[in-house]
Image (cartoon, rainbow, N blue to C red; front, side):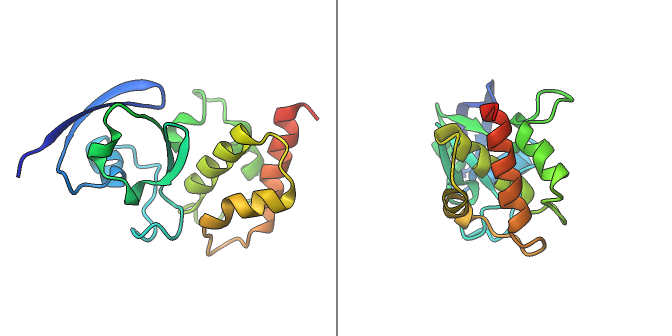
Length: 158
């Protein structure tokens, strides 16, 4: 089986990799590029643990083939913090204790960032709707929702 050469941008950096045609973007990120922040929860697109954005669109990376990344701009959890400075969402997740085991956390953070980029002033209902594709088996969801709403307020300067 031949490998395909893919040129893409991940978190603003140009990246090239080789992958099989059946290899998912999740597998490429974790196994080929050693970007292990994106987690595999279900491998069927049901849990959101592997959420990334591709050209600004929130997707489950377990449902996207690595070869589909050709020419696309991908954002992962690794691109959220700026060096030692956490993204406001990451900080608010810590402040609100909105995480426990951490498997779902990167997916929630990427999904929440995608929401706040589109809607900087979401209602609680809009946050719940947007994050409905992300499952957590540890925390319940109230602390996560509170963290996202608090981050939105801070990002707006409210």
